[in-house]
Image (cartoon, rainbow, N blue to C red; front, side):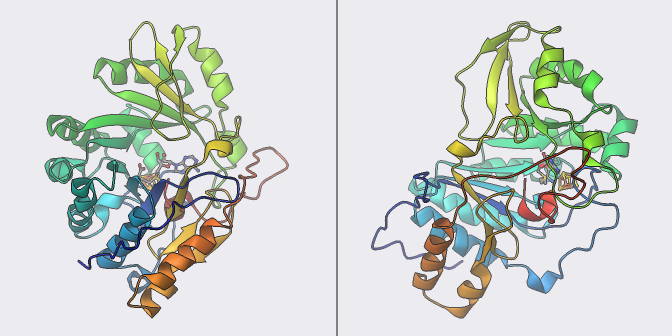
Length: 341
Ligand code: SAM
Ligand code: SF4
């Protein structure tokens, strides 16, 4: 794939609020083999394939971000492992780990295709993966994912661990769905040596169900968990928005991502690139920059770097998510699978 010219070295990407952008999340496809009820509607219209950036274009853009100080890349989607030949992208990006320009190459996956890719991911320098799992009950798993097969995901998690990858479980806290199972999910994850993080549902994209009926505030979840576990403060950080606690009973770590109840924007270090080359400077705002157009219009990297700089100079202070009975409209029209979680 095309080598990126990295000279002369340029300053870090710093936004108007003094936050350095060191983390890029890349959604490599908007498609998925699941239809989680909080993420997608049942009948999604996906982007025409010709609108997608090629793997070479994705790699080129990632390389440009790395040349401007991005130290962490997370590949996501949609389901990243359903994109054809996706391992070519991992293989190609791994060169930034070899040069030391990148600290971490990682991915977020639903785990359905992990069994067949785990060994190669490890070989590409991936050390940790986030696997999304909202329940360990096979029937409920089918209900929430609409199309998913729990055994396949558990097999994927096993394969990842056998390949030497650290697995973190991501669970969306869903009122009336998994709230009662959460203590048991924690015991399972910690028993297997995996960290687990809980996420509040965010109002992104039109859904069949009302958000307010899914939304379980993490503050409430934590209060419930205190009757099961003893929380000990943890200064553990991964550079993301989660805040962590160690549970005395299991010795394991639990993370909480609270976009709704606790606004984590002040320490935001990330931007998100979609599979069509649109850069979103905030998950919860509509403003974006079309990098595909500049990328395709120029052989040289200069104009693309200028477009990236211009976009970062517009990074907003934070999101305006609201979930309540009166606010039925999503904060942003696009689904989570478009921007990449
Ligand atoms: N398909 C992969 C997966 O499920 O891990 C990667 C993409 S998915 C969009 C990334 C994460 O976003 C998942 O952990 C998913 O549970 C979460 N997610 C999706 N829609 C969400 C929403 N509306 N609010 C909060 N989290 C959401
Ligand atoms: Fe697919 Fe992930 Fe969205 Fe579920 S959360 S529908 S697995 S992209």
